[in-house]
Picture 1 (cartoon, rainbow, N blue to C red):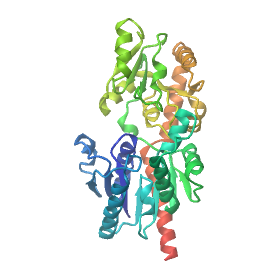
Picture 2 (picture 1 turned 90 degrees about the vertical axis):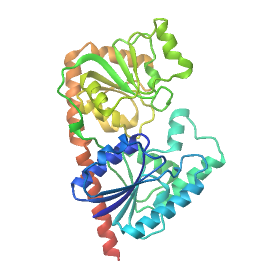
Picture 3 (picture 1 turned 180 degrees about the vertical axis):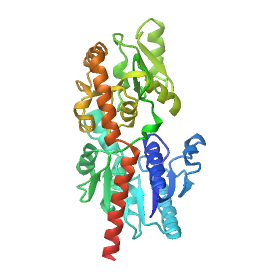
Picture 4 (picture 1 turned 60 degrees about the vertical axis):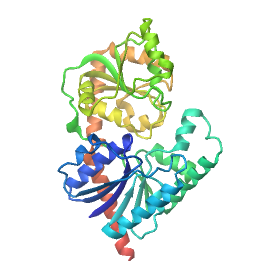
Length: 368
């Protein structure tokens, strides 16, 4: 089987692509991977070394959510069409919406990782203001989704949002994202601190909930250190927020060690179509405290501890309650570890995609 896949090199989609491509390659699937958006760094490409059945091309074509993407979308579509004609893949797996309508007869899967409208509504409480850019964006997304043979989302919540804002989508499925458990260390002795991953300026990740003087436990926030007008540095120089420790971006190995030592992971996101960081924490045997949003309820059920949605005061109380009860904390850490190992591994994700690919290819052959 030969799959042509697209991906962008920014954020979680690149991690998802790495996990999926690595596992599919090991299962004997041939992959032609094309990246878009920006040229990746050498560090971002290290995972490809020695991987069988993979060929890769990087491009800098603008993505559909960027400003003025139309010339690049047309040019990149022509580029992808030429690769399809040259390599003759059995199936196309697009991690961007627009290419679902690529002009070719090969079966097409489009994965809905996130979108601008559902992010805006979740963060701002209303749909984005009308503009030429948002009208064209909606048109491009709906265009690609309508033409796809199947639309996949990493959660039922995200699939529902695709239907609500761009659909209805007639052919769809949910496949949960996954991470390789071997990248994490669940058996280290735990230290008495909490950890969270997020950018302070990202309203969707909402790490700002942790900017409190009364955090009851040492809490490490991993992400860009910049904050509006240097508010964190100014506050801490005045003796405020004594339990909050800011770490800049970490390498995968550094983050794995931090998660391995942390007792609790705090998932503050208000917008989260899936959430890879909580999975990484669960695979590191961190008890999970999560914002009470539908996605986290869907993924983690009764195995996480929830705080009242978007309520920083209730978050502080929840951290205090879990930190003061080591037995309960250990129990919940074990529960999310087992849940992640059964539902959110890259091996399981690849097997689910492979079944989906086979069914679409078989249907295409039967219809020929």
